[in-house]
Image 1 (tube, rainbow, N blue to C red):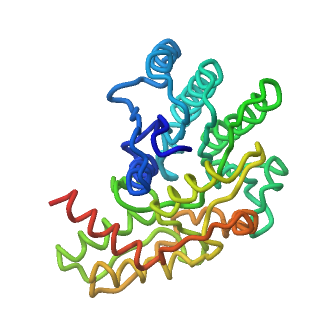
Image 2: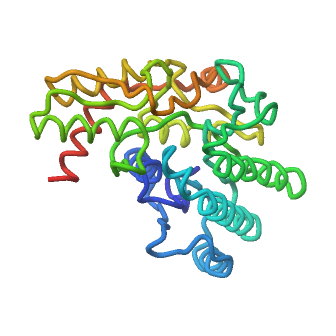
Length: 309
């Protein structure tokens, strides 16, 4: 991508989209086009076609999606599959129709089978059953991957797909019910600290292990791949480092400054025991993450404080 290329960030207000905008601007890209629900209903085919015909983006970063944690996925499965299918179908097809030079589609590590070998390699896709709690979302994301590959094969497009691990950072969703585990913990420890509570309860046993990537690092990886990767085969984006939920909670507790104790509610679901990405392919392409987990949580907590002041 040239520094003056017209680059569309679809879903620019979300956790990933806002990080992409920051990174593009920091790296000197001067012609960034922004789209989200406020100016474009991406589930509306005609609206998307009109937008692309008018704006003619050269490159597209497709970060728009309906996302959420276990509770949200269980409660709104129809929303998760419909909205995500419509967004990706409309944006990918419009990119083809308007001769976009390159598109990057953001998937999710939940596309991999529930019992995939650990760490999960790109070739594990479609080798087993999915985690039931987020199956509608995962199926939609898998459809987006196959759609990109199909357009490449039939039409010669240059559409790439990346699979990020669990993400966090500025602009995250801190809703008490609909957020992911890390922002939920930030909010819970902060509120416990304010209320001078003696304990904070964390769902599950604390033993499952997860991998976390700072959103600015993900954005940097996406821009790197836009400039250095041209294949329809998916690429994992992560750190290759995992921590237990207990270790995560203790780190958040330390960053927030909560002085009480931790308790684990064993009646709540743990989810998948491990979910670690094999990032060998990305590392061999020349990119590695820069931000440690504790550094990222500190930045995220400052963002939480500012957004809730």
